[in-house]
Length: 124
Image (cartoon, rainbow, N blue to C red; front, side, top):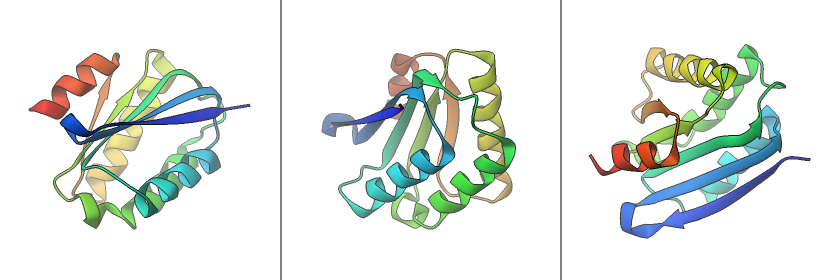
């Protein structure tokens, strides 16, 4: 069973969603909605270092992007980092980044191999 833990680092105005286990698009969408309808920050890190992303398909990325786009007006100058260590996760993250660029999403996206790299990017 997948788990997504939420951490807030107020000094960096960042929320970290750390996923572990086999994750589904539905779980990601549910967490996104909870994030935007609750206390949220300008910046968001999705840490999939300990997650199994094999159940995420290309069509799921579009669904996740659509769900997120309903709320991005709340974070117009925000950044979202995706942290992955495996090639599959990196490929999915890159496709997600491209989908959001094509949709002209105002939130900036980037893919990293470590949480530390993502946090450093958030500070720029």
